[in-house]
Amino acid sequence: MADTTHGKQHDYHIIDPSPWPFLGSLGALVMFFGAVGWMRSHSEQQFVVFGLDLATPWIFFIGLALVLYVMFAWWSDTVKEGQEGAHTKVVSLHLRYGMIMFIASEVMFFVAWFWAFFDASLYANEAIMTARVEATGGQWPPVGIESLDPLHLPLFNTITLLLSGTTVTWAHHALLHNDRKGLLAGLSLTVVLGLIFSYVQYYEYLHAPFAFAGSIYGSTFFMATGFHGFHVIVGTIFLLVCLVRAYLGQFTPKHHFGFEAAAWYWHFVDVVWLFLFFSIYIWGSWGAVIHAE
Image (cartoon, rainbow, N blue to C red; front, side):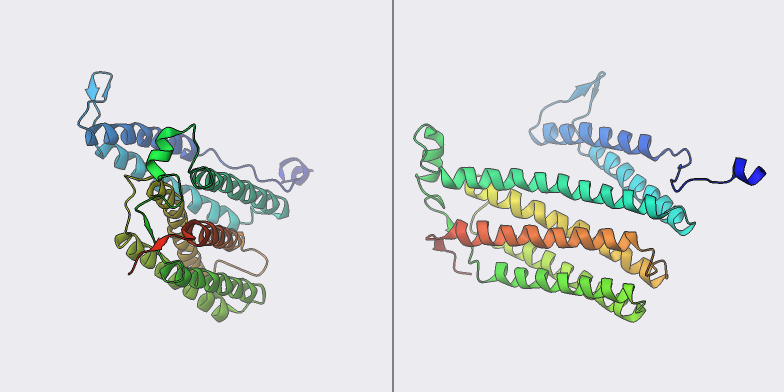
């Protein structure tokens, strides 16, 4: 009778009281005010709040440090809960639903950048928008813009990401078959390929014949590709954490949602890059003057 009264009679996980939601919200709030203060300081303006001038970049980094600490601590607690058996089939299913919803929200972010690019490119000669015609010369790419060669570094990065998609799939199948060596090798190769992609993207930005400011072409290009590059960096860190956990033996063929979530995220990054490559690099530079690198 005592077991029936006090024992766990359900598959759900009731988490212990945690400070991380409050501290995470606080960190995000500090980051928000810090970002405004940073932009105000950049334009040499004041940002007075409760009599204090917050026009400084340091507040943003304080908030960022707090958010990063909360992320580390909160996810560490989640990993610990999973190792203690709290992630039952029902809980794991809900974690998967949460990851799917998160990726769906990320898709909407990229829809905004694609929308901006296609709106500017498809209606470059819009008569009503006099400023747009003046900025683009009535054509796309705009007059005076030299585009990057899509068959040079962008194609190399496309092949790199596609290869990384195969290596992370290899690691996943190795994990399902309890092949620890295959898991570690596949994950290691994926992390290396992610780092190569980020470096090539950085090199491409340094040698781009156009800047972020000064043209709608540069703005839409750098926002879309840069936002994707940020996701590649996050995904690489995600996979690197999984690699460390794999070395520690924290994944089993039946319990490995952390790795599965990282693999989903990485495949999402792959698919988005294919859209970027074909729309912005290839279609977006069609008929334009190609920059000689």
